Length: 154
Ligand SMILES: Cc1cc2nc3c(=O)[nH]c(=O)nc-3n(C[C@H](O)[C@H](O)[C@H](O)COP(=O)(O)OP(=O)(O)OC[C@H]3O[C@@H](n4cnc5c(N)ncnc54)[C@H](O)[C@@H]3O)c2cc1C
Image (tube, rainbow, N blue to C red):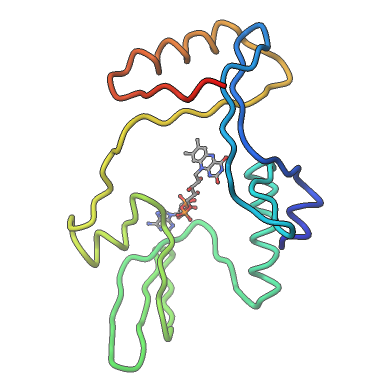
């Protein structure tokens, strides 16, 4: 997958923030990566999804869309999974990767591992067309939050 990611995206070593006059106001080196693997690669989520889904299918996965798990029945040997489209299937293992609000986590552990908000995060992207009104609103909005912290100025 790395070859595909590198062919599609562009590697970079850190992130910078610029003001409306295009002056650099902050630079955050990522300090990740090595000679073989860059610390960061920029590509769209859609392209990354295409690469990941292609690799999964090549590895033998069957991808089913627009359905979810409605029930599980475990036995010592396997687990039967019931799906919202009415189907069911027997598996050796069920692994859930359903994100930060995971329904499977809540099903298995209740509210024991609920995510906790740790503070504000902020990212900046270089757009083909600038929208000064939107950008200045976003900067003011983020800066006004009591839990926002200033990035190091370089
Ligand atoms: C606006 C934004 C920008 C980001 N930008 C970056 C970035 O530039 N670089 C970076 O590295 N990270 C970025 N991230 C973080 C990154 O997207 C997440 O860390 C990553 O997607 C988490 O992956 P995940 O597989 O845990 O969950 P997710 O990507 O959230 O995947 C969970 C999947 O489970 C599905 N799902 C949920 N509930 C169910 C259910 N009950 N049944 C069936 N399916 C279900 C969802 O539809 C989803 O497809 C960004 C996040 C956001 C919100």
